[in-house]
Image (cartoon, rainbow, N blue to C red):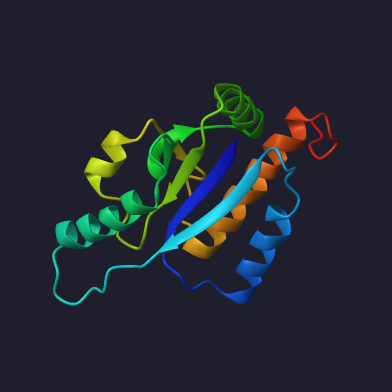
Length: 155
């Protein structure tokens, strides 16, 4: 199984890239994590719908056909870390690749959100996109660690 993180926006600060890579290399071979970045649509005088539609097309092009799609969205389901671990266990048992989508500055296209299999939120706070990448991979690693019986999580 593969966890694919698809994020709008190509540039992140060095600290965020370093932190992301540190967690990514910790995953076992049977649970690969891959990051695909897609270009942010240039703003200019384009409408919100036009911007989101252009980014949606890029995201959809990056998705494997059979992937279980999970959008990260402020309106998504709230999960505790143990609940994310259970969700990860279910994804692994299903065997399909899982694509987790991080939108750009204007969020994800409503049609893309509606078509997703799941919608999750990482926080009630507004977070910078670079930090979302780090927080997401850290929580996925923590969820895997819980499922593997490692002492990464202490209740």
